[in-house]
Length: 113
Image (cartoon, rainbow, N blue to C red):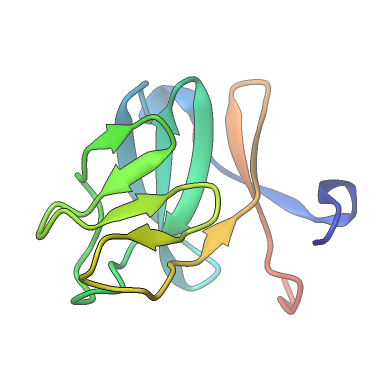
């Protein structure tokens, strides 16, 4: 796994835009990403359930898990791994950090930005 010190982080949004226990979809790197704030930690995952390709925005958060709002598939926000029987395909995750009042997301290594 790549060290977060060698990654290039980009400003994504202000921390006030994603209150504790909520999530917000944004477009970054040409993709729909979902920034989640749970347990005082910010996570970023693909905003698409690997079960039926529906948006995950608005899904319930519990600890480090996100539940798909359509069928309840549970994804680990740290790894993207699902639990249950509806899908075994993980969702993509991005390293995320907070700098001051800004949530920053790591640029994909193959990005030319």
